Length: 175
Image (cartoon, rainbow, N blue to C red; front, side, top):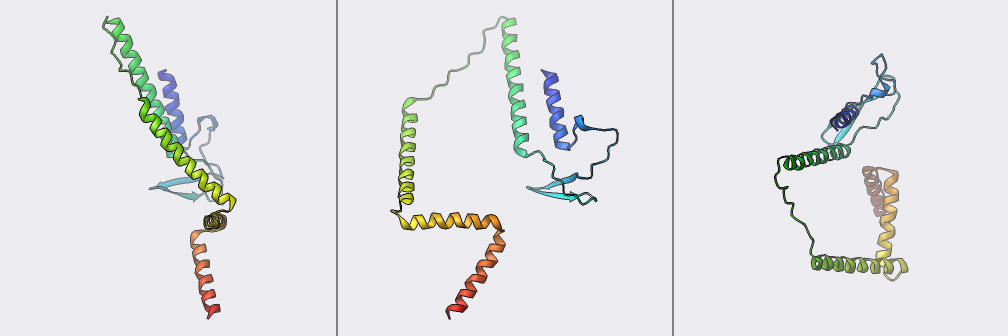
């Protein structure tokens, strides 16, 4: 078990530092497509190697590191509990009593009914929008979908500058 955890920790450390033991060669020169990743706060900065090739290497995310830490912590706690239970048996002590946890039925049913009511209300609003009964909301949905589409084409500042130019142009044409 300890050997498995140690190899898991080595793999995590290799991923963090960007070294892969399975692909190590005799020369420790970086490849021409490698990029160095520096992290300042929440942003990542890339320094490109002199070759000019923009290769992208996946870097471990903080979410995967948290997941690995949680999994390892869970395994350690389970091992400690297992050892403690076996030590109590060997020492002829009564095992620790773990309290039984039960969730009451009534609050769960009330929560489910409230959630069901809210979801049904949302479905009725969506049905009104889709059927064309509420034209104002329908046009708002179409406009938001259109803005998402245009937003995927260019950045916010570009859209802002274009919007300002269009507004001033329309104001000039109206006068």
